[in-house]
Image (cartoon, rainbow, N blue to C red; front, side, top):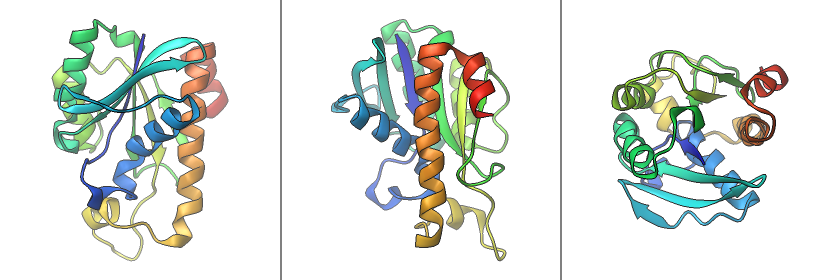
Length: 185
């Protein structure tokens, strides 16, 4: 069973922001695979179902970004899911909007959600899909850039990245991480 986690912030004011790319990809996966994300437990919203005949849990932590790892760790433990079957999806300012990067392991960079995940599960050795959001323009403050509303002119590129991330999850499940990295990186 795979645990596929999208990082984001739970309140409505954060929907449709760059910082919620992980939640948005989870929503796309849920819609495509008819998985209802309607269970509220472990400080998260989740749903169980299948993607390409493989059992999965789609999870959106409701702890706010900086505490995402607490929720994720509880689900891993309760369902006895191996770290090898964990995929975490999140936004990354160091990647061009519309692009993604897949990694097998690595540090959190300056992403507080990933810092929480790594601290909570005590390892950097898990698959992650980083969805590019780019860097702020015109000296815009980083915080208002990632949690502010997305201008219309940026939406199309960000949608491409979310779609690629969704396809990358499918590729990982069907053909494994190495083939997915070769295809998308």
